[in-house]
Length: 73
Image 1 (cartoon, rainbow, N blue to C red):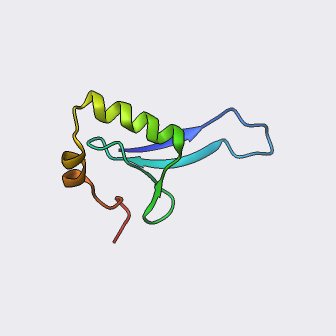
Image 2 (image 1 turned 135 degrees about the vertical axis):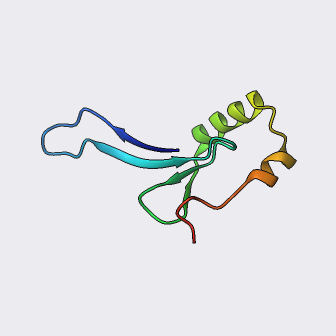
């Protein structure tokens, strides 16, 4: 799934925060504006952990579902 995040920016700034690709099966997130750039930070990892627990996705299930980003060759 692809998302564009925007905000109410002042006139002299871009309203686009970023473009993101999200794997709905694993919660992995990539920068959709650059090839194969997977994103991570402590808050995102915590959210991914919550999502994976809700999906009852074990570590072995995650590893079998893990793919390179949608823009990777």
